[in-house]
Amino acid sequence: MEHRRNRNVGIIGTGQTVHSSHREDVNQPELIREAVAAALADAGLAVEDLDCVVHGNMELFEMVHQPDCWHVLGTGAFGKECLRVTTGGTTGATLACAADNLCASGLHEVVLAVGFEKLQEGHTTGGITNMADPLWGRQLQTGALTGIAAQELIDEFGAERARRVAMKYRILMDQNAMRNRHAHRRFGLTMDQLDELASGSPPLVGELRMIDMCSQSDGACAVIFASEDKIAELGAKAAWVHDHLTVHREETFTLWGGQREVGTMRYAAERLFRRNDLKDPLAELDVFEMYDPSSWWGVEWLREFLLLEGDRHLRLVEEDQLTPEGLLPLNPSGGVIASNPIGATALIRVAEAAAQIRRTAGDHQLRREVKKALASGFGGTLWTVLMLLGSEPPGRR
Image (cartoon, rainbow, N blue to C red; front, top):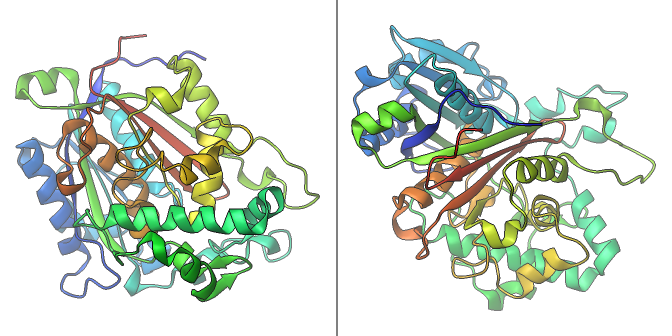
């Protein structure tokens, strides 16, 4: 299916808070304002320059109904059009897609996407586990905690190899996070701790251990999208939106029977790459900001997103091909395992990918020139959102 756009759109500003388990120094609007102010400063704009604000979080986690109304104090949306979006863990990626569409359609020239979560003020697991049907969805009642990916990797590749690869992936993410001043969990892990961490971290579910799993974080992220004409008028440096795609299966995915089906990750990647003429994502992408809720999922999803076969995804980790200097740098920011303010988490992936293209990533800026970047979002019942960014505007299709 051909992807059509009325006009090109680029990202001209990004901003994040420092992510932490407890941001008790600020309330929700103040937390959001930090990210918005940083994004406006990055873009060289003022609140008055924004045409529309797209706001998102998992409002049932903080238990504040219609939080966008209160958060106007932080988003600057007073007197402007404002949309509220919530799609589970994919919320941040959906915000990016919605903001892009609003600009590409010609409805607005400059749109701010802002996602946030202040998880210390609610109960995340309580919110997640109450969303599944107690009879038909019992296997979802662990919420975001699942050991399925770990067990599948162990069954396919053996326990010793699978555990070592998952823990090496985890240490790599921490080493990346150590260079990112915004990251929440920055432990200073080293590869000589691999065996100790793989056996000594407290277990959660099955093979999934606490060290493997993403955190609960307080934080916010803001991204400013603008039309091609506006970018030219401003003379702004942009990361151009080439394409985005959303795939979900709702409650139709297989919960029993052991039948392996094409997942939303591989399906989305196949379609996105095909319609953007990417033949070899490993060679043609310069960075991938992947939504990786745990080290086990991160390893498994490499195979799906990059359309790999056999044990190629394991070898990417084993052979250090995902480091900032490797074949395809993965999550220079530290990824979701390092920082997880859920309503902002997938938007952070887009912001970080855009920052690498615009060379505004700070201490975790890649040395190489970044021409194409991929960002993913995950959530709900195995939803996947992919956004492809480039250093040059795409040709109109």
